[in-house]
Length: 595
Picture 1 (cartoon, rainbow, N blue to C red):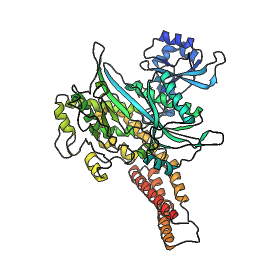
Picture 2 (spheres, helix red, strand yellow):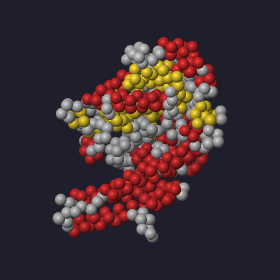
Picture 3 (tube, rainbow, N blue to C red):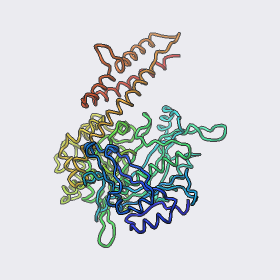
Picture 4 (cartoon, one colour):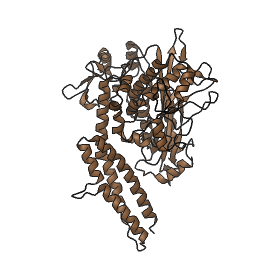
């Protein structure tokens, strides 16, 4: 809609903020948006009149506090020390969230809430946020999401076949999905995000048309991309885009899922995070710090090589921030273009930029546009806490730059391209770090693990990296963007959610799968049916049936979690997933032989 205020720009003077709010009386509320360690954002309704009246207090952080027990800050904000202040951040854009289902009677405009990114301050220390000076940390994220008709059951097998046949990727959208996607692109442009593209992704199913001509059985995967920004603004933008997308699609009668792996067996939702670094000189010009002077002869310059080396060498302690949930690790499986190995790809030659979609962090280049040179971290998902990932990633990048800045680009390319077991100055001798091959097809699982390191299978394994690699933890905390206290709190919160989700959600789902594998009564029963059922019956009992002397896998997993034996619980979780897949296969064979 015209004549709406969509953003208040970076560093707008206080007097101008008040003027703009008074010129737009449809903006009734202010909401301070603080991001906790789980990536949750706060939301409240503060009358604009109070914000204008106490503007200085909002900047100082004394106007609004929150109880630390209501946000995820374990070990930081405790029950007997729970006060968390929330000063606003004037160094990023502020967005107005309009409620198009509630119009102001006087202005006949939708009621708006000014959402202001804010810091969470406990005992005078920031939980989130960084300062940027003459070095620009540029970043952007790509948002993938599934859209479906409410209460619709997904036809997994049909969509899996469609995915293999590549029938959906960049297909034309239709009906409500098209309307919602187009409205999102237009709305996000109104907010100044400079949307670059909205399109169909690899997953989906052709919708059906009912008697009234409306599309039903909608289940499609989409992606929206927008322009890069500095690191903190990029993370803010991502949070706001998720809100806008969900609301617009809901208004069209569609559900949106940003889960990393909403449907097992189908492509998950990634959020590839692009990482750049630039210098601003006294003449105001911006210079890409990764780009080679001659892109036809070199992939990058020394800073670029040092950056990717720092990122890869220290990734074990960045990965916990990237993948902190069961859902996120479900997505990172071979065969779905989701990275499982700590490895990069630069391209076969500098003259021909390439995109290897099987690696963790790839080099993105445009020979005619050096400003486009950046790294794409492919493991992130829409619920990754981008603030923490960028803080950790840039800290690791700076470590790599410091350690290699005095060496030549040729020397660094040689080290980055070394084979496992070859001597190196900065990178670890036992590992390889570069591959231009298909990591999934050209290596066995054992070869991948030996060359690039075994990926964590559970949240517990991922969080253990903080204990296993103390030197790397020092790297990501050296610059002050992350503190050991924040890492400890993040780990504690992630493990609590991991334990709770397994007990309260995953195990009940697994029990339902076991219970659904029922005996089929048939007059055409053969010895093959009896054999299949006996194997199936044994698998069901191993997973879910207790006796006095022997406990089922489900019970042993529950007991391990409740007793705090997370190492055992982690192993049992991996075993449970393997046994469930075995059960599904056995039941499929059993059903197919029945007529």
